[in-house]
Amino acid sequence: MLLRNLVTAVGLAVIAASAHAQTVLKFSHTDQQQGARHAAANEFAKKVEQYTQGRYKVQVFCCSQLGNDPKNIEQLGLGGIDFTVSATGSYAPHIPSLNLTMLPFIVDSYAQGWKFYDESPWLKEQFAKAPPKGFRFLATWEAGFRNMTTKDPLNGPDDAKGKKLRTFPNEMMRWTLEAMGFGVQIMPLPEVYLAISQGAVAGQENPIDTIFSNKFYEVAPHVTLTNHVYSPIPVAISEKTWQKLSPADQQAVVKAAQEVAPMARNLIRDNDEKVLAEMATKGAKINRKPNSEAFRKSVESVYVKAREKYGADVDAVLKETAAIRATVK
Picture 1: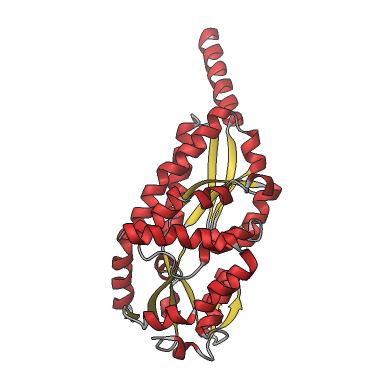
Picture 2 (picture 1 turned 90 degrees about the horizontal axis):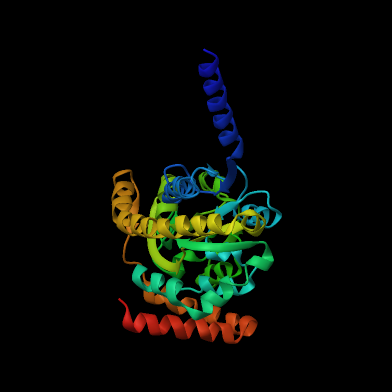
């Protein structure tokens, strides 16, 4: 009996020590629970726990519970959260050159966008600037190309005039939408549905998965496939968190993030058509062939403004993406 009690006590002590040893890391993002971003974050969480042998558990907070995108990135620097995933342009307040990833129409397909993010020397240089800003990039996940949902039909820049469109806080996006003829309204994602329904804005722009998961098509049923900006979502870790990890656990976190990337990419690419079809059954009116030539012509001034502010970086981005468009379909 004494031996049995001793064994039981030792076992309980081991379990308690193991539980105590597990560190919980916070992963905050702005997508809904049914969105691809949340699915990727949950898969990442499983892999981190597996690859660190349970030393770390990632708790995922969706739906802007802990903050919007700018707040999440700010909290990375402060160490208030451990991970976030957001559009590349959301990181631009900390690394201004990343605004240039939001230049309109620089890639035309997922294959082209993936090649740019995986192989661009310029982009690697920009991402390397992150650790001194308080975070570091682990991998690039996917959100897709940005498109528009409006209350009224939208076929070209003429239809944009006089309409106020919601977007996220990004300089290049504001320049692009204004060049197209829109008035721009910045607001957090959770406020957009109500703002459209109440007429505060005429619509919004986002990738297809985000449009679907937030049900924006219910209040702005005209979904126009402009594909005006390719908008993947790099996942980042707080530099304070990174420095606390052992080299082995750093490697485990990177491995987890990079292994999720293909899943996230394929999920978005393969689901675009399915999601559009489902939105159509619920009343959305899908415009697959807007006046793309007119939209592209309307944003020519954006490249001029970008060169005036960012100089040679603009030419580097345009040169790399032009080469990719010439060799990849």
